[in-house]
Length: 232
Length: 389
Ligand SMILES: Nc1ncnc2c1ncn2[C@@H]1O[C@H](COP(=O)(O)OP(=O)(O)OP(=O)(O)O)[C@@H](O)[C@H]1O
Ligand SMILES: [Mg+2]
Image (cartoon, rainbow over all chains, first blue to last red; front, top):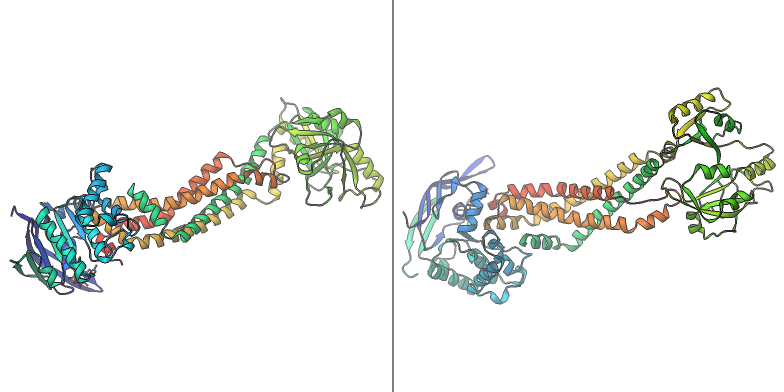
């Protein structure tokens, strides 16, 4: 237990649509170890994004408990939950991750305003994060001046800028060509190995999933098997 | 600091839209400032004119005159110091747009009645010296470039010249005054009653009546008792009169233009409502475009309260810039407007309270335009905001 970074216990989530109740996650149990790289796969509509959002504290389950980095999320009100997110999780979404009116550097520095770091330290951390993702030379570009792959790398820089324990990525390579996708995957793998991040990545791409240490299969709100990926 | 940048850049994302909204707010605030200043200027002159002077006029209408015999009767009342004839002449100097007030008065009494008038050029003696002499305000001198000794022809409209309606009355500038109080018009043209009365009698065969009497009461006397006494004295005619204090009398001219205060509030209110809708529209559009940004900011850990403040801040920024431009414009144009309205409304000024009011209004518009987007930004779930593309 002590080595578990993410614990979902009996988690259910359903949506109301019209008069019908659509059950998305159905009494789901899941544990993920600290420092590992997980890929979450499953057919469209199987609840991958829903699960990721619950783990990241962006949404709340109907029942059950999600515990991440030792924090039982249901016990946190919306203010503390926001602070908890700032300190513990970094998000990378499929597309349109960045604030369009801010430069790459400003986007990465943004979450650091929630930390006690000084102005000079914030600048240093943001620059470091951008150098890790290899985007130092594009710091002053606006998102519209970046390619999709570059945008995702900046989004990853922003996600790691405040050094969270957990990275949650929803189809980070979904909109990218093979080469850009590989670069992003290289980066995520490195973040897991060198920086000890716990990474959960939703993907439809078997090649991307193959780079993860574990592959979690989700189908119709139920957990399938968890594969250990010896090659990764 | 980053939120200030965000606010600035988001507002500048659509320069045209922001400029137009800002400009509309600026125009509205300018208009409200100016309209409000017209009212405060009117009020001010009414307040400033509290003094020992009473105005006696027909109880029927401003346009009905009183017999000359009333002067001595009013003078006889206890507490009355002095009674001066004050006759509106209503002539035209060259062309109608050169409008200003000409009054036939008892010259010596008029000067004693109005210590606010300081003769700055020429002399009191020169004015009193001969019957065609006039005393004119500095405001008129500035307007028409007059100087001492100038002959001024005034075409009589109500009172035609005996030689025919095309012949102007001739006056000569003997003295120039400067008014030391805002309630005393700096653009009066005062001339001798005797000259007026004789000329009118020559032309029409009858001695003229008197439009108004200006009465000065003893400082120690009871003004309202005197007003009542004057009113009752002529209750049985031939002309019933009404005595009012000078401040009320001036206010009555104001009410002649309609209820200016109400009029201005109504226009101002409508303008502000229109502008509120424009600002609200801009804010709703802007907030709509930022839905995903709100989701990202929430995912990054910014609190609901922060996003509420951020959205409200954007609205304030938009409105305050517009408001600041509007107020600056009102102050910048103060001199020009004052000049343009000098004849009708002397001493137009934008007082500090008006600026405070305008700033307050701007804040309220900012609040009303921003509160809805701000509440939405606060309430929206991060997942919902993020699913917006
Ligand atoms: N806010 C919502 N309201 C109603 N239904 C929703 C909502 N969000 C998701 N759903 C439904 O829940 C189900 C699971 O959605 P989810 O986004 O988690 O799927 P997913 O596995 O991420 O799919 P994809 O691979 O297409 O991204 C879908 O049927 C979806 O239509
Ligand atoms: Mg999804």
